[in-house]
Image 1 (cartoon, one colour):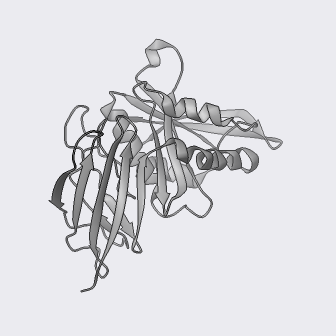
Image 2 (image 1 turned 90 degrees about the horizontal axis):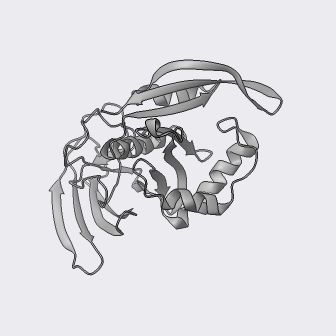
Length: 270
């Protein structure tokens, strides 16, 4: 049985933790056990190596190799998320939430907290949707400084993740306050955007896996998502991730000379 290896890195913007490791995976079967070697360092400290045996992947009909690692996903921890699976309803505050690595077609696709260097690519994805799509009702491009301010926020629940392959940003997910009134402080509005051609690879689910898990860890209670209709793919993604429809607002948006309905969905996080 031929094996291949792939190195990866994941970053946490909370306290500049850098994790790196080597994934050892079979090229023949995605159902057999995998292993991952992980180490991480903090500024001013020496590397502390750890190793964890992974669990067999029990999913049916998936071509990806999924590798479990004992890397928790809280603030100050390296975060790498499995593509294609949304988080379970784990109660807030429970330790040792695990984020696996996914290897597809011998190439690692990583989901990690966004970094300043990602923001031009993130802005380009969003600008394309402004110019060509209905997923946002914005009509003007946002300055890069606005993205930088969003990334720099230290408010619990203001989370920002990217999906990266070969150094390219293929998508992102973020959470922002639903409304400014204090009573809404445990609610976040969430969104996911993918690059053209990145759909159908599990990236949307992987981004929500990381984002919703981090919101739960931050003590958030509800995640809300607004979907401009029609958008069957987005509705399917949200339903698969446990969102429930709460209502449709008729003709509340107008773009490209069309009136647009918006369906709101929500997910309880605790």
